Image (cartoon, rainbow, N blue to C red; front, side):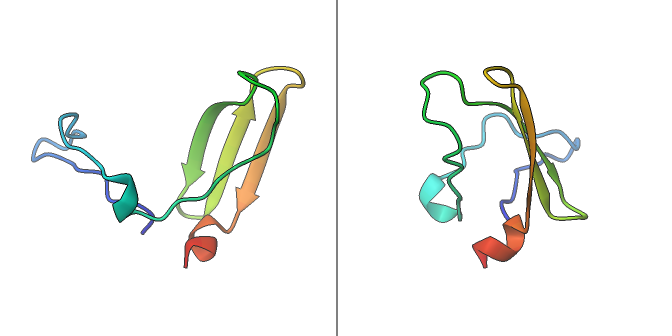
Length: 73
């Protein structure tokens, strides 16, 4: 598991719950140097352990990062 998202009895994410950064593993995606031209969107494919990263412009990019869980172990 990468992170446990708090889910209420109704199946919804508990928006008032807090996640503490120091309690979880993390990775840094240092892909671009420009200010305000970085990552615009993220999606994670749990079944195939892939992180998808979208960059909106200058240049437009869609990247796939494989092995996220493995790298945190």
